Image 1 (cartoon, helix red, strand yellow):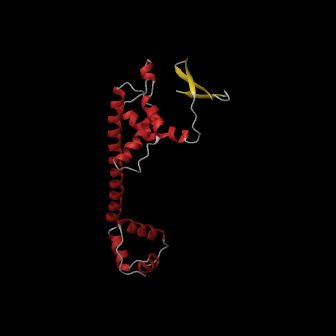
Image 2 (cartoon, rainbow, N blue to C red):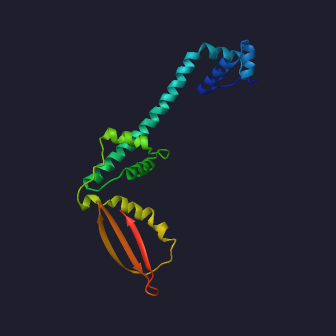
Image 3 (tube, rainbow, N blue to C red):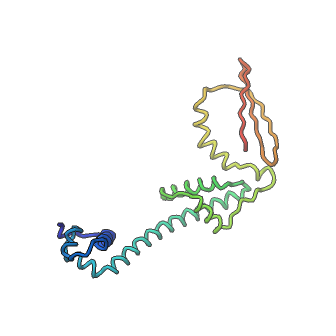
Length: 199
């Protein structure tokens, strides 16, 4: 039995919960089973309310820290979103969630996750809706394109041997969407290579 031991608030709370689960027994026997001194158990039972209150304060302070870190990310995301929208660039939900996680890492909040629920609440608080802008400038999602070119394209192109190709490009309009078709041919075999990307 450990007679001299300093316990944290959470450990004290755990001892009290286990004490409540024990069958009716003397305080001395309970202390033996819980591996604490009888005097410590007696003090914990007398100050039970203070221990429970201290535990609640710890939980609330942890929640407050999480809330503050989320607020920092939300402020940074709102500033970024405002700048991008002023340039008439179309921004999507997945792009904003990815940007939120990138901004969180920059300000040292590595464990932040932009969940669907968090994103929905943030949009509602900031009164943000994704109304599709009219015209070609609004249609083009330059930010997403640049992000894709820098993050995805290098790993995709690395899988293939280098080919020098001539190409032509055709742009079709299909019910408000662009369909870009890139057709390439090798000079030797004249095999047609088609790369299609929906934007």
